Structure formats: structure tokens, C-alpha cells
Length: 485
Image (tube, rainbow, N blue to C red):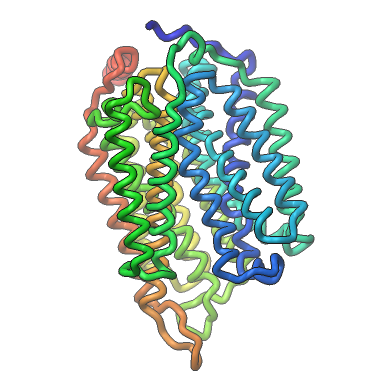
């Protein structure tokens, strides 16, 4: 079946802005509660071990939803999924804003996680609705919101909590979600990519994927608390892998799979997704390690004694740097191609971590290292979905970009667990009974982040220079002629 002609937005700039705002707001949900995480047991009258799930449940729901939302978008069209995601985010935010106990907060936070499907679907849609000359910049801008939202979420949330009640966080999220809903409805066109397809959603595949992912990611995310050798950790991780293997076998036999694994096994897509794990790991490592180093007491001799709000403000420029480097990534893709651009981004990320091993004596020094890391992320995150879409049929783009977003999420979850373990297992005693991460632990974390980024570079260099989609090949040839001329 021929792919339908694209439906262009009447106001493409406004459409991109609406999609970018939606991506920013859904990404913000991941860091909304971090400034109040230590206060949640008191605020919700629950154990600390239970309130930790307020963060974890959002990440788990997001991981499961990204592929599912992409597949639904391929079947029914992308705009309905975007509207549903924004609507769910608004409802979820209201649920949390009205809650003072753990269970409804967990329900609301899980629903907020499901709204993360907005980002991969928005990325897949934007190339269909903007003029070709805008496509690379539009994809880069929306891709950058994944990192920008997480980076600016911490200081924004800390400031809101400092001047008001913690429920205000979620009332702000509600209003923002409604604004996104109205903007998407008004300025984003409905494409017809899902109409006329005979495909159907694969409920068995969706269930197996959800069970496998949740089990594996729960094991990884709890490994620091339970211990990597604990039976619960190993059981969850091994059980999750077994279920995911079964899911893969089901998908390969199913006539209408949730994810076309044969397509994802193509070398460009497979290596890009593996690189996404490594680069996602590298991105998250700085988000975990740098704030902790900023907030450690100065009495340690290496801590910088910053408040939560101050630490967030030192990190915020990194988020803006990701957005600044989105158009830089677009220009690089127009000259050297998405593959080389992704390799450059991962390389810059590794350099940022190496700089961090040398510049830790003052907050501004750590900010410089974070800015370098963030510029690498801004360059690389924009190139990943471009490679995926250049090697995937348009009618499968939603699921393919969703899977790429999932692999990045796996990388960030692994980073949180590994960094947490390194920091917890290498401590120094500031006072009797007060153990804090040692200076060597932070250096080790920076080196691990650099190594992950280098692995990403090596994987990307294995991606073929030429895309596999015929129209993408023609575009690449035209680009080569333009550069040569």
C-alpha cells in the first residue's frame, strides 16, 4: 500500500511550538516531585519505601506507554493520540493535586507517565506536517524537550514548592496540559497515516511487553536498595528478560505485531537503539551525580553546600543548552548526516564527563562540565529519531520512534541504578553514623558516564551511512550533491 501524501500544517511554526510545549510538559512530570521527595513520607503519611514509588511508577508507566502510543498512532492517526496524551496529563495532574494520601497520588503519577507517549508520537508526526526544509530543525527541537524538561524541572519545582503548597506543582501541570490540548487541537493537522490500514492493536503483545518491561525495570530501579545479588532483584530482572524473550517470539509469529521486530533488527535501527541505551545512560548520569555533589556539605572538603533550589538553578542552563543546540544538530545533519551528527553528540558528551573529573572545585566549574554534556545530548538526541525514521516506513514511524524512546528510557533507568550503587558503596563518614558518597565515588561516576558515551560513539559508527528508505536515500544524495557543489 502506498503511503498517503503528507498533510501540511497551515502554520507550521505554531504547530512545532505546540508539539514542543507538549513534549516539555510531559518530560517535566518526571522531575516534578524530586524537590519534595524527602518530605513525601510526612506529606502522604506513608513509609519512605512506599513513597519512593511516586517517582518510580511514572518512569515505569512511561516506558510501557511509549511503544504502545506509537503503535496506536500508526493505526488511528497521530493527532488523536496527542490529544489523548494531553488530556490524560491534565486529568492525572488534577488527581494528584486533590490528593493527600499515597494511593491516589500513585494512580495520578502512573497516569502522568502514560502521557510520555506524546514525545515519540510528536516526533513521528512533525516531519509529516512541516515543509521539508523545516523538518530537521522541528525534529531536533521536539527531541530536545525530553532533556530540557528534566533539566529545568528541578529548579522550577523547587521554586514553586518554596513559595507555595506542593499541590501547586500539579495545578500548574494541569493548566499547562490544558493549554497544550487546546493548541494541538487548533494548530496541528490530522494526518491520514492510520486510515485505510487493516492492522489492529496486538493486546497479547502489549500485555507481554508491559509485564516484561515492568519486571525488568523494577529490578533495576530497586537494585540499589535491595542489592544487586538479592533474590528479589535477580528474580525481577531475570523474570522480565524471560517474558520479553517470549514477547519477541510472539511478535515474530504474529501477523500484525505491536512492533515489527524484523524491521527493528535492521542494522541502522538496531545499532541506533543500542546507542540510545548508552547515550541515555550518559545523559542521566550527570542529572543524578552533579546535583548530589552540589548539595553535599562543604565540610566534606569536596561538597559545594548548595540548597536544592540553588543546585537546580546551576543545572538549569544545561537544559537550555540542549534547546540551543537543537538547531545546531539540524545544521550538522544537513551537512554531515544524522549518523555522524549522533556520533559527534555522543563524543561531546564523553568530553563533558572528562572535564567534570577535573572541574569540581566550585559550582560554576560543574556548570561548565554540565553545559558541555548537555550540548552533546542536544546534538545527539535530535539525530536518533532522524536515523530511525530514515530507515522505517512512514506508517510504522510511530512505533519505531516509540521503541527508540523506550531504549533511551532503559538507559536512564540503568544509569540511576548504577550511579546510585556506586555512590552508596563508596562512602566517607562525615560524623558518627553519617556516611556520604566519597570524592572518589563521584570521579568514578563521571568516568562511567564518559565510558557509556564512548560506547555510544562506537555503536553509531557501525550504522550505515546511507538510509534504507528510498525517499531518504534520494534526500541524502541531494544533500551530497549540495555539499559537493
